[in-house]
Length: 310
Ligand SMILES: [Zn+2]
Picture 1 (spheres, helix red, strand yellow):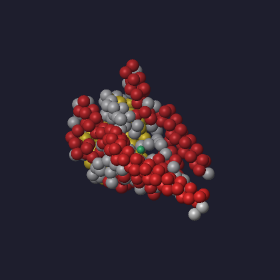
Picture 2 (cartoon, protein in one colour):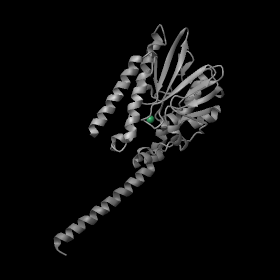
Picture 3 (cartoon, helix red, strand yellow):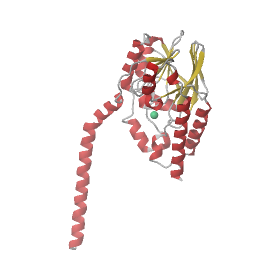
Picture 4 (tube, rainbow, N blue to C red):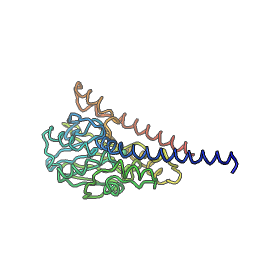
């Protein structure tokens, strides 16, 4: 062996040793940090928020960011979204603080199967005994407690099966796009606005305040699905079709009250503050302009992502 060959082989084995050492350090770090990280994720850094009436029989019962809406009625109540696993106790407290009973919640609904909106559903279902309705597209993910096989992207499966797992609730009913869900005078229409998840659902329902009737629209999510930024979209024409169709559907809804699965998306904090000084406490939430602007912004981001790909 020449001296150069010997030096190369020495540096090769040194590199291997270094890599092995780094792998051991990473593994130990992961074992120490991951459980804490997972606990923090489950709580979502969510802070409690004071529950309040938005309009008519529509109440805000969610946390500072992940939203939950309560629709009350004489035949029982409907609750949309369960937050993170750690948000469920806050939602229960908020419902009680408003003077309603969790056992009067007869129907549980969901915006989409991600852990920050479906994580608390199992606990809320247990506390209420309510029937859970899930879109066909998101049923598999909900039933598995958040594991996503979407796009067959390994990273997606890995993250969802580990860090984004949540207690799986029992699915009582599955529905398709356009389904009507009724409970006494309460009536909601399910608009499956797929993209963010396969069965991402936008809920539309009328709310009456005095002699006004307004359409409230709670958008499932406008953000692009996570793996698109990491993986090529070319092999997923179905996802592109879904998203394009969802933007058309959302624009077609005559939304008066704009709601979403995250409070910051529809500026809940600002509207809540405006409500305190407004002559008409409903008016800050009448935000058709904000609704249409946000759809346009999301569609522009989608078009940009498509262009970058081509
Ligand atoms: Zn999501």
